[in-house]
Amino acid sequence: MSETTVSKVRPIKVVVLSDKMNKSRVGVQERLVQHAEFGKYIRRRTKFMFHDEKNETNVGDVVLIKPSRPLSARKRFALHKIVKKTEA
Image (cartoon, one colour):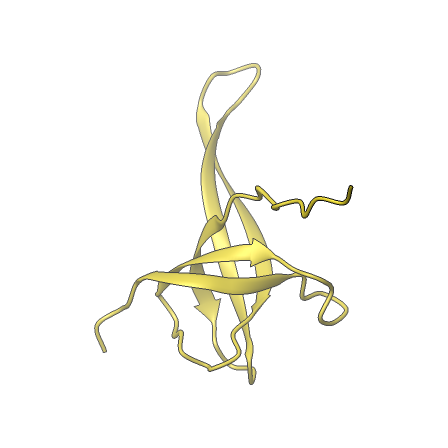
């Protein structure tokens, strides 16, 4: 009785930071975190390297990425969907 399990992983929304590599992109996710002692909001950034098979994203595009199998030493995500393209 083997059932196929559907992965319920949420896509991560990132902004493309670098498109210098072939089929690879670097995206950044920014979030606000409240400081524990002072209560002031601090901006935190996380950088993700993701795979873009068709080289269709450029710097500034807003995209959704999903986890995938390891594609290289640092690349663990793949392009899922382009949300917003920048105007060139």
